[in-house]
Length: 301
Image (cartoon, rainbow, N blue to C red):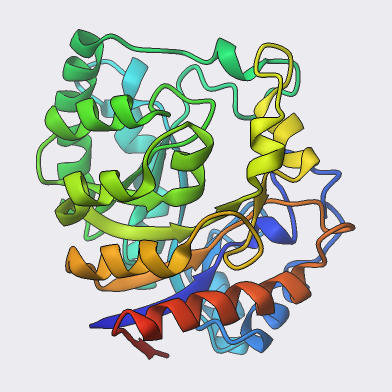
């Protein structure tokens, strides 16, 4: 079993909350990511979007491109998907050229994940019929991405239309094999899902893993009728593996049992003034690499 370790830049600079690390240069993120031991990164708002420029930045720090977020709106797109295909074209070309494992697709049609004044319990919800229609359309979009050389990994996410275990179950039931699963234990736990049961049900669909922990006392203490996703972030709902409430040793073993090999990406949006990114990168790398080794993975550069 082979694994690679990457980290997301959101610990250094939060694109949805610019006050969190907005002044931190990309060079700091890349240098500290490599120093912590990571061999890959995901993209963020400060990353170059031209192939030559991004290749130069990554090469200078000895890093690979693991993946990166894509703000999809297939949920509300016309059936021909023409505008969505045009919107994703540049990112697909970039990711294909630099060997990214997948496109981390987040459904942002109607999302409240970036709205400070939108309480958690006001997020968009879908009926099974709506998810069925969406799933068929998403499958066609995923097939388009695969044809461009970049598989789609669907990221279930707090404050979006596909948030809960129920939402994810229905989406997996109504999508084809082209729609892979980006498994994120932190978002599942925050949404009240069973992080191990989801692996048992959908492990064969996992094509990418975000290793995000939660601080359960913070999550449990949220007033979801008044507080937003961004409020939760500022309160410290998320952290890196080894610093929170989830048992990543067991989680990683279940992922191994499902046969997954590939990138494990430490991702935890926090206030960098309270959780220094370089320090937490080392902490996350240590805990996750230990869990991977114990589960029988060999960690590749």
